[in-house]
Length: 81
Image (cartoon, rainbow, N blue to C red; front, side, top):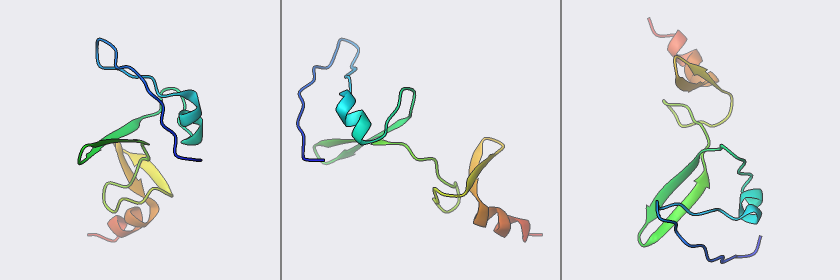
């Protein structure tokens, strides 16, 4: 995707609409979580990817007691006595 600049107005309660073409390019669907970060004077938006609480892995993950854990860390934890 080419660099794109689209102007949006912030409403009275601080909301903006992310244009559909940008949501499609980033595979952001309705109700998806979006991370918001600051980098100097820039605001960065990106789709949230759940990750393991121990190592940060985003693949082969599962939820256990409301925590996200990857397969490798589950194996490592199972070896602890």
